[in-house]
Structure formats: structure tokens, C-alpha cells
Image 1: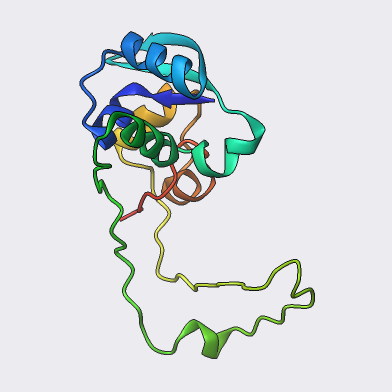
Image 2 (image 1 turned 45 degrees about the vertical axis):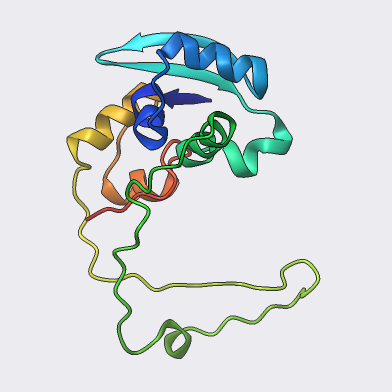
Length: 154
């Protein structure tokens, strides 16, 4: 899986060069298969083990791992929600029935409206490109990209 070095550096505050970060990760937690210059950034091709996909397959998950191992604080880049709760609540518009409580003890839903489909901002397009992904639009890029994880579209 490809990760943007610049984004990881921004999230962790790490001072490592791309090569130093690759070596650090390889020696401690994940094998970095390659480091490739892409424009003004570098793509780190990190082999994420199957058991670590849930927590480390996005930039924030890998940054959290780096910060933890380096004793750094994960920077709260864009982690604050810009969602404003409006009335009526989602529970008043939508009913969810859990039929297999042992398989799914909890289900959370949110209704999002007044979304405008637009091209993604340039910074997002370039980071997707570093990860080997093509930008589609703001909604697809924010919701479907394994590269992103927790971005907002406004």
C-alpha cells in the first residue's frame, strides 16, 4: 500500500528523511518495499500485514504507529468534525433493525445532505496521485480512498 511521505511527516512531526523512515518502519513494524520520488513528495510502498489492515491501512493509522514508536504526539490534522447536527435527528428519519446482534451489536448511521459534487482540492489530488490513486471528485475521494482516512470535503 502506498503512503505519502509528506503526509506522514505532517501528521507525526517526524524529522526522518524518506529513506530513514522506511528503514525505521522496516526494522520495527512493517516492511517498506520501496521509496519512490513522486513530484515534490515520496511514495512509501508499505507491506501491511493482514492482521494490521484495520488499524494501519490509512495515513492516520500508520502515522499513529510511527508517532507511538518514536514517542511523538500524533498531530490532530483535520481530525475535528465539521459536521453540524441538525433537526430532525437521523434516528427520526431512518430506522435500523439489527437482525444478528452477535455479529453486529451496534450500528451507527448518519444522514448527510446538501453535498455539492465538485473536483477535489489540488492538495488532495496530489496526495492521491502519490498513493497511485486517481482523483474522481470530492465525495468519492473522501469516502472511498484507502489512502485518505478521516478527511473532510468542505
